[in-house]
Amino acid sequence: MHHYVGPACDFERRHHMMNKYGYHGWHAGELTDAIHAVANVLDDYVQDSQHGEVPVLRQMPPERLINHLGMRNCITSDGMTADELSAFIKEYLAQGTRLHHPGYMSHQCAVPDIGSAIADLVHGVSNNAMSLFEMGAAGVAAELVVTEWMLDKVGWSSNGSGAILVHGGSLANLTALLVARHHAFPEAWQHGTPQNAVILAPANAHVSVTRAASILGLGSRAVDTLPCDRFGRVIGAQVSEIIEAHHCAGRTVMAVVANACAAPTGLFDPLPEIARACHDARVWLHVDAAHGGSALLVPELRHRLEGIEQADSITWDAHKMLRTSTLAAAVLVRTAVNLSQAFQQHADYLFFDENRPGPDLMHYTIEGSKAELGLKVFLNLAHRGEAGLAAYVHSRHLAARRFWQMIRERKEFEALSEPESNLVCFRYADPPGGHSDQLHIAVRNTLMQQGTFHLASSFVDNRRWWRTTIMAPSTDDSTFSRLLDTLERTYHMLSRTVL
Image (tube, rainbow, N blue to C red; front, side):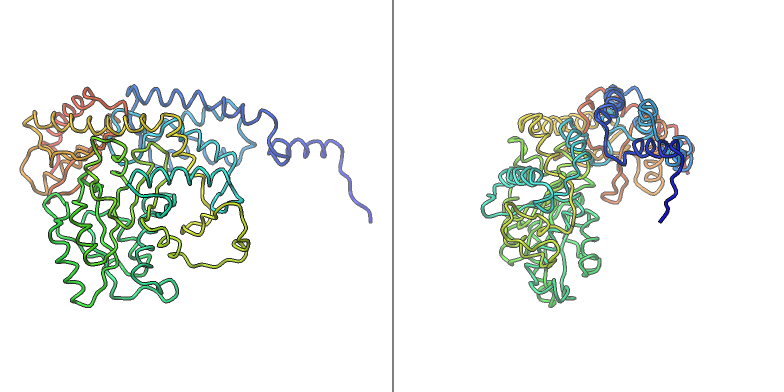
């Protein structure tokens, strides 16, 4: 058989292109060069953001942004030089949202710390999908030590309780309610969820609770609302009555969900009363402490979570107040066997050797492959120390309280309630109604367009409120003063134009 052999120059060209595109692996120093090209850009990005002299966010429409960044050309080109990579990342970051900025007070996403950033880099290089022990023994060890620490903060022991890290609070709530389903209906994995199952939750429960009900086959209508006060907090004294009413109607309360704290308000449900009602009725209690769980680190704040140790399951997000990048959330279960029995899948291409030297965490999660989530939390703790993270959490709660006091001192504004976390809801003190709500939304949008402040919004007690989540360490009293002044000016300007 005769083989065609092309010219030597063609062979050399193909060999060069193979090396350029990395077909033979990374060259020595290639990663170092790329990191050096980007590290200074990232450092400048954080410093510029913390100083607050750049817009807190930009919102160029996607198609314009694709063209502005030359994204399609980047995909079809022959690759980037170090200088081109640096320039692209610099402009990419400039077109996003700066969570380190003092004017960022919007959604409950962490201002990432250095430990978490390093962990993301490590995982990006190693890609140890450690849901199987053989795919990342060190990643499993990091997760085990972190979840052991979290269980201890709740007041549980890793000897009898169980925990797993998952990609986000929504998946954590789904996992916890799956465990609750197994507890109420042990045959549900094979036979499905009975149609008489209900979940009781406050109306302001996280959207993932209703989503979980639909995914689990209950349907969103199976989520019934618990009685709440005007701020959306559960009225604990009425929980027993509601559970009993459902039981008398032939329904099975699969779980009760409580907020610690509620995403729209930052307020905590009365956990001891709710836990007592659930215990008496033998109903599963799930506490969504995605945002508020980190208050457990601070002795002065632990009382907000009194009774959490009586829950059957807990969601606690590290990518909120533990300063990890998205996503890293814990599902904590008081009795470990409930977590281990909730998943009953068999896969002989994965699970075939009972003599492995460490646990396969895939047995306890909806996910198959999983990132090294424990490393992000671990390195944040190791880098700052537990005391350092606790000081951060405490400082943001204290800052929120100072902001609330400043609001009270200005007659133009009113606060929803005294803050119980680092969230403060407030509004301009105008007559309630549709025009007022529309005006508050318009003011928020104007501030975002200007790039001065990024606020969130909540609808509570039949009124629209601005919601501030005090996350960035750079947000201080001078920031609050500028915000209130800007809101007052913008409100008066728009009140003459918004219909």
